[in-house]
Image (cartoon, rainbow, N blue to C red; front, side):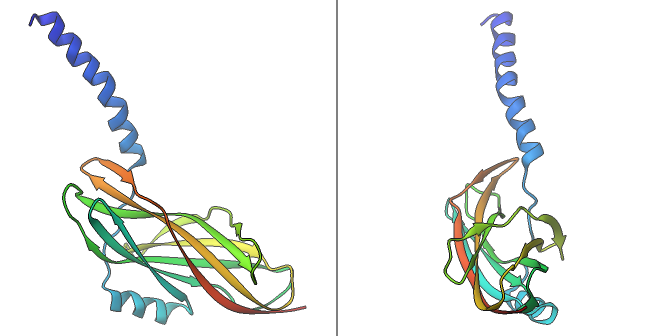
Amino acid sequence: MNKKKIIFIILILAILIVPSVTYEYYTYPHPTSVMPLEKAYELLNNSTDSKKTTFNLSYLGSRESVVIGIDAPEYGSSNVYFGLLLYAIKSDEKINAPLTGMTYEINNVYLSYNESIPSELSRPTETTYMNSGIENVYSWEYGISGNFTLTFYVQITPIGIIGPFHFNGKPVTENVTMNVQVAN
């Protein structure tokens, strides 16, 4: 091969690879560390009155478990905004080749009153929580009074990591239900 062809091939490869690596750099998910399940439950039980559920996520032969705790006021008054704290703590992880790491992303949270059609809650502000999970703060308005059931549908996507690249798996949705009393 002559020198021009080699330079042309290197240039084409650079044009194809550089944008991909740059995109990965700016969208790389923040990996979360593992907290033992007992410690995760202890943290949730001592810090909140959370209702808990566990997500078992898998991607390309690797798996992770994420404990979700939803903390919402069970007593309140109508026409008042309430905050919803959603705690996510990775409690287990098993990485198999070809992955070099695994994390997750909370995509959506839907809310249903009694058995109404679920509506999506607006995206929260995400903050690091004990370097082991994330705490999301959502807000909503009850707007009704009486005794009713709230069901939160939480959608999480597992993310597989191979070196500097990440790939989204299939989203998983679980629900958390709590009874609420709202006075006039």
